Length: 321
Image (cartoon, rainbow, N blue to C red; front, side, top):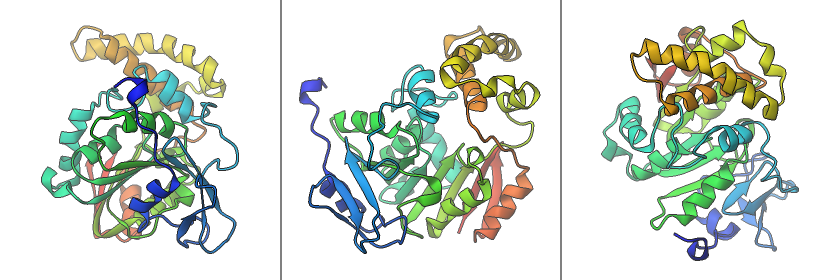
């Protein structure tokens, strides 16, 4: 679709309407309403909270100042290091959109058809593959991220000839503008271990899961992720600013890439090299990178009220209420 035929992104009223039963003020949990300008959401209880509506995104992080182009934090990673950019066409950590459409139902232990019509939430949607996979499977999906990556994701979404039931919100996991018990399926893949308080982040994710719902988590485990192990053993690049860290990761990736290729008995491919660079940058660039044994994560899930809490794969956990 050419730029000339891409429809205008919806305004605040159009974004609020399909989320009216789940969107709440992150300060006081009151309902939200559209301000007179039509481009801002405000708290219905008038607590002073505001959220901006820009390019089809409800932005609870920077309502007063537009920082879509700053590329700070993970925004730099998803829009500069991820070689194919964000969205359904990308490949991240070996994952493709079609591959995730097959794997997500298996991880959730439910037939793909059962996702149709459910409410789903992807907390820390980043590159966008998990959100779009859920939406393509028929779930009414909300993708949330703290970074600016939600803006290019929304632009791609509104350029699709047939738009799935998917909306993007920019927000912090600790101050989500979403009601408790509102989602049948919640995903948070590779997010909580990059926060200052992973247990609190898990509990925040769990609060959005409805009775009988499911939470899928990916949390780093000690010595299970090679790039994270490199950060522990060779921590020096972590103090570099992102523009300097990126070329350093490209250099560090070469021996890792060759080793992985030999270990897998395959020809060194460009896709594996790109994934290696991405993995190294993902390990070195965040301020917080925590690892936890499986029993700790399972204990937190049980504390959050999940009757089923189990490790289903390396670093992957499923909680069922």
